[in-house]
Amino acid sequence: LRANLLSALESNLRHEESGVRLFELGRVYHRRKNDLPLEPEIVCGVAVGPRFEPSWRGGNEALDFYDAKGMVEGLFGQLGVEVSFEAGSDEGLHPFKQAAIVVGGKRLGVVGGLHPKVSDAFELAGDVYLFEVDLTALLPFTLERKMFQPISRFPAVVRDMALVVDVGVSNAQVQAIMRGFPLVTEVALFDLYSGEQLPAGKKSLAYRITYQSPEHTLTDDEVNKVQQQILDKLSKQLGASLRG
Image 1 (cartoon, rainbow, N blue to C red):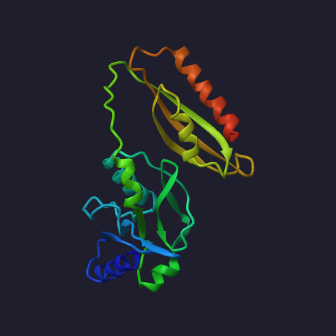
Image 2: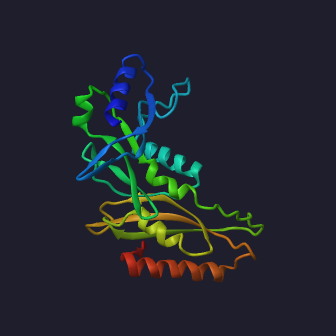
Image 3: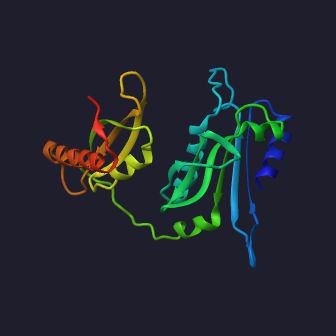
């Protein structure tokens, strides 16, 4: 499936200058010893070229890994399925520009930049990004009953938290802990830093955390208490500390 899509991409790029985005859905076959082959339904997508359509306003920045990751997040968002990402190891993708797609603790696919050797083999110019998702494995997660939660009529409180963690700690690990607290309704990473101001082997992750109660207006003391509980748990499980 992946090879067919890359061949189609190469053909389209010969006639299109502003970039191409394609996807294909189909079955793939995995041989099994002394058993019938597995035949999961897979969706595969590829994209190359500028982030936006060319216009008089400019904005011809090329697609990057985060655009491809955003496409995957958009797909899963439409399905109402919570997705996370962890380090990937797909040999067909760039070793430093890829991530495994994880749902419910299970790897269901991969997203990342095409490995230069694969791009050369298909005569593809530019940075090509690809995602692949096992729809057969994803299906059970889409059948779960969705619970309606009314929008709170009480105001939200927004706080920032800048952390220092080991370089091996992922954003997904940090957010999973933060989102585990009942009053936390949204978490967004807004800054990533690693450099001379930090010890070797460390990086800084800065988050904007939204707190909200469905029952009452939160006080500063309540938010401060949860903020400290989050920090304590991050410190205990991930060795995180506040950045001074």
